[in-house]
Image 1 (tube, rainbow, N blue to C red):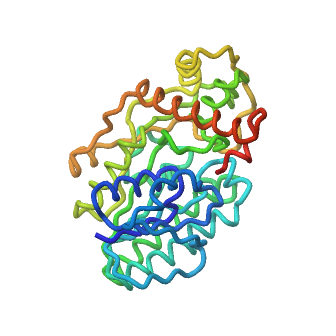
Image 2: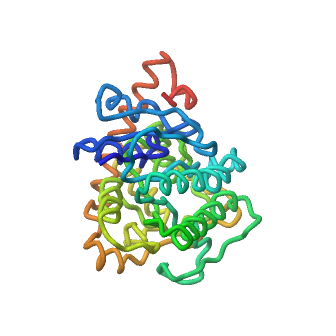
Length: 327
């Protein structure tokens, strides 16, 4: 098949590109590198079945070949980044989704939207089922991300109803693994980088808030299964095992043998208190559930960051420079 992946140099997008190339598909990666990394796709550049297009998906995109799938993963998804680039975040979610839907319609391709558990906001039901409409602050600091994804879902289903476009929508819960950036701003990467540098692990609030952590290989397998299925409504993908942030910090300290301490800071605005997916539909419809235990996934991710930090330090000949590590 011929598959286009927007955000293909990003964390999850680069793993998808790798999986599709291993399965002998032709892959077109689109990325503007605002948060993506060239290092994530460097090994694919000499592959004749791989093409990189450096492009902002908020602008119209023209492809002069057949496409079978269009997967829209271009998004500013980490809190550090979407708080720094709120308008770009909205544009990738709104204009970017519109452009990708138009491309899929023109090519008669299947369309995939990488949605998010953030559409549930600070949920009032637990665990979150797909039928839950959410509890989102439409004008808060996080609204640029939350509402762009909610609107992207609405736009996707408008195309399905009006143009009979074949669509797939997955609401992705906390995912982690190699190819995350050192300054990503998400909790797993934050804790690992801080622990490896023996810096304080910063917990916002008391650490009692919960998340569920899905290793990236499990997530992309679920995406592939979703594309192969006939189901065209939103589906949760994530790990249903709930973990407190404080417990995660303690586990990472243990695995890294770090001398870091835990530092508690004020809880950010609209930070969800609990976040855990109900994946009953994914189990039934896709026969999918995550396989990688948290400890095993964290060990792989820690090893990735050890290599990443070492490479960055060697390239600068001095202590880690976060900006220098976006390579």
